[in-house]
Image (cartoon, rainbow over all chains, first blue to last red; front, side):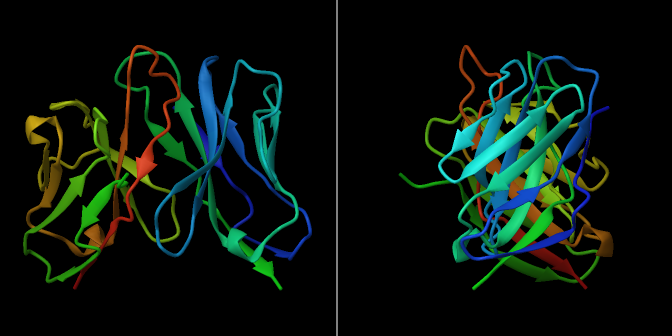
Length: 118
Length: 117
């Protein structure tokens, strides 16, 4: 079974600074996808960034980038130039690739609460 | 375009009472998910539909939970009877799986916060 671990329950960063959120996962699969979702107080989960395991290049989306270390099963999220609107819970998630009932199912970590301070 | 719509946003019920949640996915999305999120935890999948068919309901407590997705569009999730431990946020999500379904992005609604007293 796959597991996702986020070891930082809470993080704090000053506005305009850079912060890195950690995530590790455990799987025996070779075909999978990794995601970072943001959950603000409105509770709606919003996709921040995704990474295909078969791609060596780290994904980037504007101020958000990942450090994907496949051998170490590590998938950290870096937020540059932090903004007050980045304050939210951040969840790392795993999805098995391929076909069948176990695919297209997100397995989430326990989340990291990020507070951006003015 | 409207996103995933869920109702109600909040529900407070007494234990042993029934409760139902409703979800309207994004138009054209053939796959629908129900997740449960306990306080301080990440969401966990309860059931996944592809069109009208439940293709993964292994985590759904079938003694008290039921779900349906008539006509492959809207879905309802029901709990009967509710227990104190059912207090959580229930999230609905949808996605479009086509010929290349791998890693398809799921779009989430705002969830229903259920409190059982």
